[in-house]
Image (cartoon, rainbow, N blue to C red; front, side, top):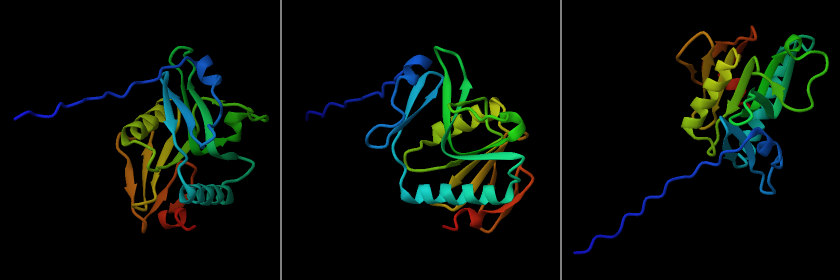
Length: 193
């Protein structure tokens, strides 16, 4: 009996310099956008309508509770240059980002923010791999973020990573948690679209 041939394909990585990454379009015609992790190109498909509604909800919630004279709240793949190495740079886009006005200055950059946000919020969608999300959290924290929220719409949970702890705190829909921005949030409110 002949056995069928097993074909193993390995995904190839696309490695770009920072200049090559800068030459890419911001988005492709199909909505695909890009991030760069230690020089490796990360392609992210458009996440979907509910994803956008949750981002809008969390952004509105943060803007309603954080003093405008103290914080900037940005949404929509806010770009952060986390590592400037021209041959192996890291540029990540947060779904939502909070920075103090003091850390940004009077004139926010029109391009990427150089450094990490105080708080990064990522709404996890089908296009995000668990491995890359763990790496992204690590990159944010290692470059100065104080807190990262991974929001899981399907499970209606939030994993809160902190610069002060190696393990995330996991909150269910019925829970409330205290954030680095000195406010408490009900998980259910994050999904109230």
